[in-house]
Length: 482
Image (cartoon, rainbow, N blue to C red; front, side, top):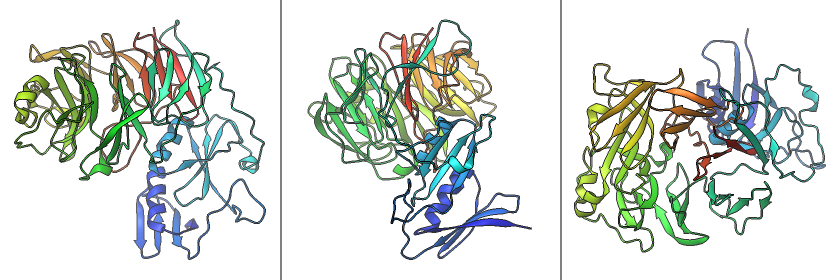
């Protein structure tokens, strides 16, 4: 016996891909005007059928408009993390949210559906679409639910937000979202009105350590804008080649002589360029013979001497490269080779993230994927490694807890913070989890590449290292670090 639900759509293939990603079910059948999603084993399915003159339903209901006749509910363990994940797949969070334990979203063709938190309590399905009058958002700080693990001196506060910020940076004791047109939250937790709004859908941002420059960009697109404060400096671009499948390569910082620079790949996916931030002058112009490497997550060392690229090569397989920027200014071709990090050091397992601890030491993290298990000089799977550029060797290689580190690492003194599902404070010398905050849910993003786009967690560490701001689906969590 089998059963299923048929759903009308203007583009059945598009909707099938969305629900296949949400449910992690394969597309079992596809033909002109019809697509079917079904689990590998079982007797249930979702079929999407093309409908001429399709009109998306209106929710909350409005008299005279097309009403929702039915909707799908999905039970999830982590509400905020799942919301972020399905938004990355193409869903849109509904402005009206009647229940604390339910989130209403719209799929790519406008059908509303519900994510329901698995909190051990029965949910009245009749009320999932109940209309309530929404009062003003209380923008004052409030304690977050739950308690931090592995520590007694840590606190988590929550700033409710009308919409989740796509970027965060500290400006003194205030938080700023460049992607939000300069949305700002003061120490009192009150949101200040954004001075402007972007007409282009930028969904990620970065800033230089000095704060003089920032940039907004589409993480899986080709467009970016460089900002000097609230002033637009110029438009940035990257190669279209496989752009939807890996994160935008972009870093801002200062070289040893104090010049603020932009590092990116404006022409080709595998050609790094260093440009003067103020003038746009290309500092690495010249003949190039690049390797077939997709540069992705870029970062400059604190003194600007070295450049780290965490990217990937075809299989695909994540890897890391380190370059000398001072040498690149006189010989741009040095940005095309192996660089300062021997391939043997990073080919045992897939590198998923990296960051600089100081001007010499960098931390690399590996996931579960293995390449060459016999490479003794490499970093094994699910490890943190501390590499010294000056000494050309690993100072530490330590296994981490039974979870991949993820795609984002933030340095904090001799520690790092990872963000796979929730923030964890790690000691890279031992791999020990110093503290973690499972109640602060962030997207589960294991690598910087993949056909399934998951947004990078949004977080900002205060320059004094005492406070961590983390964007969730409905708030900014402020964590006081131990």
